[in-house]
Structures are given as C-alpha cells and as structure tokens.
Length: 74
Image 1 (cartoon, rainbow, N blue to C red):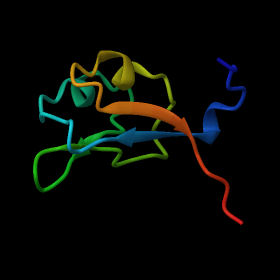
Image 2: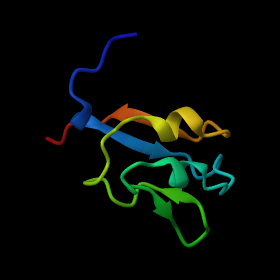
Image 3: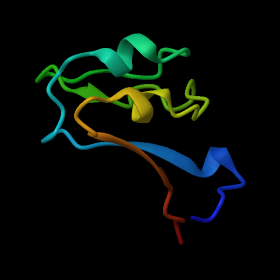
C-alpha cells in the first residue's frame, strides 16, 4: 500500500447503507467533524474541522467509514 503524503487531500466517505447509526464515530471524533443526517446516519458534517486522524474509520464496527483520496477537480 502506498503511503499518503498529504492528509488534507483525504476525505471521509461514509457508506450510509452500512451505517447502523451507533454514533461511535461521532463520539470519538476529537474535533466534532461528524454529525447525523435526517435518517440518524453519520455524515461528514464539518470537513473544515476534520484533522483526518482516522479514528472514525478505525473504530466503525460496520466498516462503513473510509478515508479516501479526494478526486481532483478539473
């Protein structure tokens, strides 16, 4: 696996179909970057607050969260 050099290029991607609304990711986020949508599913609500630490991805029991490189806009 190739190391990612620029964390700012990462985005939090949440698969709402896999999310069971447990709230673990929201509770663990050190910067409060995650919230809930109108279906009570986790969302990356405040990307500007996110430090891309990966705790949400690491602790999600449903494997619904991944940190992925953002696609470049042309």
